[in-house]
Image (tube, rainbow, N blue to C red; front, top):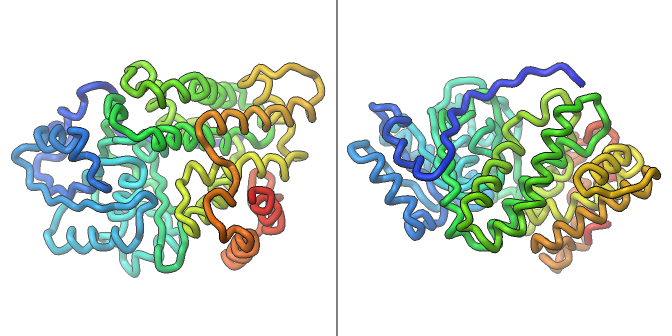
Length: 386
């Protein structure tokens, strides 16, 4: 187990009816910009709950933040904050809105062109506008971490950034909000969280026994509740376990002291930027094929995963590891994921060329937990995904 430091200052407020606590969580002198997405919060009653809790506060609304939030849209919010001298951001939405809030938080006081935050992966350590969140869609864990991903529409890039100054001051997580979500979004949330765990787990044994068990317990819980919560989102037990699993999958805990591999996400971000495919579905397209291409260096952990999560029996590591990949594919299929790129676009034939070239141009030439995923391996993974 490697050396590590774990810091997470987010005040997480979890459970039914907790949105009412906003009045105590938002600073008394706050001039708030309320960020939200496509307007679903007006249909499901969340907007009313939020504004009722914040009666008496100065609130400026800014909606229209896209799934996979656009840099261009977020810069309009930055301009609005500067013009009106607002001093607190409240993100009411899923991971995209919260990710957008993180960029806005960093960009308002940034000394230079804010696009550099994305293109130069600048680590944000201070000088931000404070923000909190009300989670409406479990998936990304953005409510309890300091990372963000933003799309630059003009260049078809989806880029990540983060830093210790970008933890939410608080996040309210009320599992009852999922009752009005479309089935597709619930499916996506389960697979997004599941793949977050795999990226921090399917590497190589590092002697981190408890960390492995943490990861496996989240995977087992998502396998248990995932299909059921899609069909029964009003079941509070299912909803709360689903939401908590998504938060725990990417709040930083399970990655401490262990190697990680985020190449599935890196490739998936390119597919979203190119073809506007749902983030979770890009992960389902790429993940199993990455495990196949990188099988020899991942098979020991794949076999452990197969035995502990899928109860696969056997002593031959290769056989168990391959069956673990098959079990993952079956689960993704059960969760409604289509795992072929050609199902989402007719322009798939040159995708591997484009992504390989883009990775080389960015200097992303040695990736993964062993630094052995090279651009030519990325090409193989993408071609296998057609």
